[in-house]
Image (tube, rainbow, N blue to C red):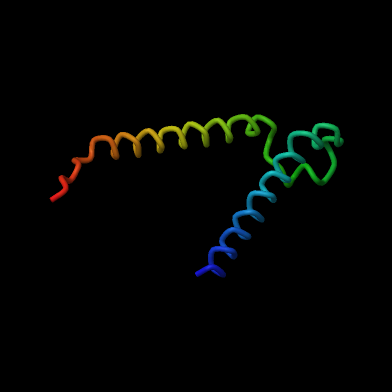
Length: 80
């Protein structure tokens, strides 16, 4: 099982690093590149740089709130 855990950890690290690199390039470097350069076709418009993280954060907070509410309202089992 340890090998599977390491593989999942490596996969999550690679995905996180690639998302971070893409977002950083999109926000920090792309505004300084000419607008007619071919690299612009690989990125969304700049407005989405704010909308996507905000919506993801709101969805995460909603999910966590629902989960915490479910755990708090779940009936407790009595010990025998």
